[in-house]
Each structure stands twice: as C-alpha cells, then as structure tokens.
Image 1 (tube, helix red, strand yellow):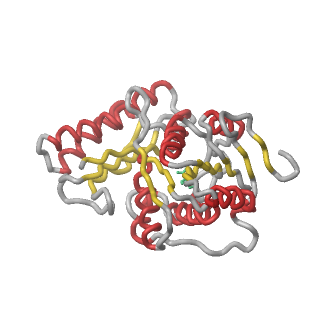
Image 2 (cartoon, protein in one colour):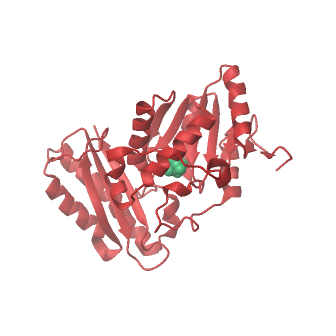
Image 3 (tube, helix red, strand yellow):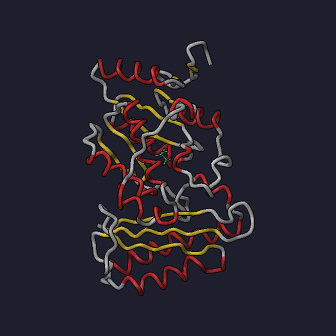
Length: 301
Ligand code: PAF
C-alpha cells in the first residue's frame, strides 16, 4: 500500500487499483461518470470463486468500468454464526480481480463502514423474515444496510448479484425500488460444479463423502423441475421425494423446500409457474462442514 492508501495492481489492460477509503472510491467513480462512462459494481465478502468471477465478467460486458468490494460484513452474521472464522484470503481475491480486469477493488475496514457511533440500520420488513430469514433473524437487515451503504459510496449504474442467493437479490431489488435508488440490479445465473453443486465459499468444508452427497441438492431441484414441466403441481408430493434425495445417506438434513413466487418469494399452495423452488440444508456430517448451511434454487418461468 502507498501513502494514499492505494495499492496498484499489476493488471491487465488499464490496471486494477486497490483502495481502502471512501474518498478514493468516490473520486475514481466521479471521474468515470464525468467522462460519461458507466460503472458496474459487484459487492462481495471475498473468498472469491468462479461464481464471483462470472459476476465480474457480466459487469464488464454491461459497463465501461467495474468496481468490486471485498468486505466481510459483520451486521449480517447472527450471534451463533462464526464471523471470525469466515475465510479472508485477500491476496488470492485481489489476484482474481486483477485476472478479471476489474478496474477498482474497494477493501474497506470495519471502522470505515461502521465508524464509532454508527446507528442507522435498514429493516427490510416481511421479506426478511421468510425462508433464510426464519433461520437467520436480522440477516437481511444487515445485508440491506451494507449494500445501501456500498451503493451510496460507489454510486454504480448497475449492480450484479448471483441467483444462488435468490432471496438476497429479491431483498435488494425491493430496497432499490422502495428507496428509489438510481441503480439497475442484474441477477446472474448460478455457476455450478460439474455435478451441479452451486459454487459457494462454504463448499471447501465438505469432505469427500458429504461432497458426493451434496450433488443430491441440485438433482432434487432438477427432478422437481422435470415433474412440474410434466404437469405435477402437488407441492407435498414433490417435497417428500426431494427430501429423500437430499437426505439420502445421512449427510445433510433439510431445513426447507419452498415453492414460491419468484418476485415476492411468497409461498404458493401448488407448484404452479412462474415458480421459484428454494432449498436450504444443513450438513450433519462430523467435520468442518458440520452445521453449515447450503442453499440453492431454480426458477421455472
Ligand atoms: O452476497 C454477499 O456476498 C453479501 O451478502 C453481500 C451482498 C456482499 C453483502 O455483504
């Protein structure tokens, strides 16, 4: 880092600037906007994988400049969720941003985002209490608060989120619409392993057997989609068989399977299109993955 708190990346093309202060982000983005360049933004908590890279590529296709933030946001972790153990492989993350030709990486400290005396928090309402929110009370309030702050710092034209966290993207869209924020939200398809497991920074914790069994999550979603396309609408029947596929072998226990409206996430009585099928499971295998949540979804239009 140099005296301005800036690290210059050995990057492709224009170069990747790494900055730590709000002023530096504001200056860079204001200069781009001054040249009528559009700015895409990918907010992340680091531990970047191919899923994040696909969001960066989407941003680069859509916009003239791309900003990525790397910030492990404490306000979206519950008291029983281990914030301290969250992976923070910063040099690998910066390398990934350079390789993807990101223009600016914003790596703020916790004190930069939440200075002493910070007290204003967003409440996302009922949407935040559904599905993931039921198991993670307050989680989406924390996500919305930090994303609103990041939007107000970065002032992007477009922000890109992954479909894997479907409820998060619905919460963000709601916030953008409720608060009239001048940003377009784009949701990019989930990136998967060859056997269908959705990419997640938590996948590294799965041992060989639970990793093999984790393929059942996506298999169950695909099976349900095929059934629905053939005319099945009985959510109960679909859920029973999906649960069996997910829990087969005893590596995972189901938290929920939701059949809901893709825009509002309200539950549907029957599995009728347009439909989002949400799945959340907990790994029960003794070892580093034990107790961790894995989520996935499919949207059927
Ligand atoms: O999806 C994530 O990584 C986080 O929830 C986000 C959007 C960066 C907010 O901290």
